[in-house]
Image 1: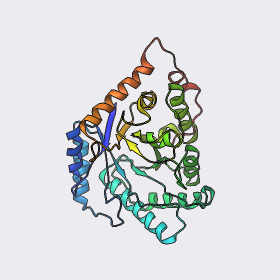
Image 2: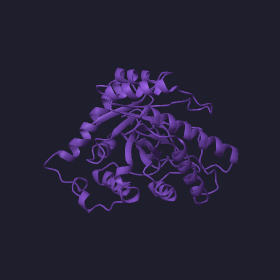
Image 3: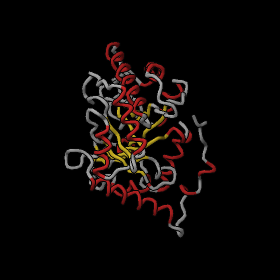
Length: 312
């Protein structure tokens, strides 16, 4: 079990590890620039090197993820916004690589009515460019771009695993592309994983469309909106419309050991120690759904028959 959370990084980055310690997580996610501003934060090489060292030697925090700035829109038809978005993604990825991060989570953006088919190639081209131009990661470090599924509002790109599959394929399916699934976005986009069979269907679709090896982490959130509402509205665990249904997904054998990153509001300042404790209890209950010997589930037995895409 690897329960993480989005935390504040601070200027020297190492502060994010301390923030994670304070709430008891084993993974963290951070912004490396303001999430709602274009101006990039510049980090001296000694700052990112110090973070790599601190992360490598940390006794409990095993993974760090970067969340790319929210302003990025790789699906825009505006040339100026597209150029700024590619530059911002490239910078975020360069910092993530220099930190030794486990991935950079990215919202692909919105086509704003142009249609998904019209933007697949520009989005794929932007991803290829960022991967090529971000600079090398330290030896032995893999820092992929992790495409996050969208809740489905408006013209958002990546609202289904099928769309994410098409983007990855259009980019040439490089090793540097992976996936981060958001539990609230799945729910809001109409994916019902309330039962072990429903959760198994999600796992099977990930394996079939993008390959199980590309799934690097989950954002663990409850939802303020109903199943299929197509709105991005996170709630604290147990305080939303998903509730106990999350147990089936996070307890699944293919999911339970991935970094599960809380992006919940807490009391207004983000995840708290109590939210981390609630997440651990949630995963434990989910595991029990699968591991009780008197219960049989397709999700615990179907892995050998699952169709999978070739791993990256």
